Length: 102
Length: 102
DNA sequence: GCACTAAGGGTTACTTAGTGG
DNA sequence: CCACTAAGTAACCCTTAGTGC
Picture 1 (cartoon, chains in turn purple, yellow, blue, orange):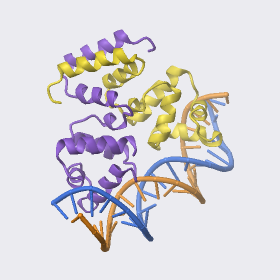
Picture 2 (picture 1 turned 90 degrees about the vertical axis):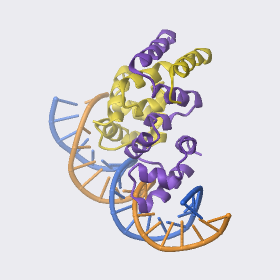
Picture 3 (picture 1 turned 135 degrees about the vertical axis):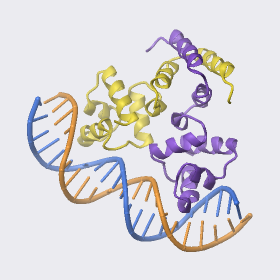
């Protein structure tokens, strides 16, 4: 439904978590973790940024990943997140080199 | 204060908008555009994702840019947003090549 | 154990009205 | 015109309680 729903579902399943379990690992009150995570994943409610950051940390992804509307940008962030400092610079430099509007 | 505050202030000033003007261009009710945009930029309130997307569109940035915690990732998205399809693939491929955890 | 939902209370954002540079 | 704020209302999220697979 929403961008967040889509990314959350993909990333959660890839990591092998249930909705409830992911919520608990992210520090959500166990009693409401299942409901909240389901609401996020179904697009009923939108998590605040700090909640999104906690979820992202558990899944080893940058929080910005969940706000990427197109898949290509999402994948870029996913990979970029794992790189060493030196490798990151290489990627940024290439993007800078190719860019013409910033 | 917050990540959103920081990115918003930077991007708005770079584009030469006032807080109110940016809000109006983004489709916020003119009567409350000044207060809302100021609250976002001072970290008093956090905009919803759809508002953030509208602001991002005016500033020619991806919405995910405003959720990047580190500057390097933010800059990457800023440049990446302007690239052609072919150039984007080059950048993604480099990131994939260097990645070892995804 | 898993995904999912309705409903109400509590928290937050949005609006209004206004200050001062 | 600009940045910014307090206070009240409106809107939303979070919690509870529960269903069904």
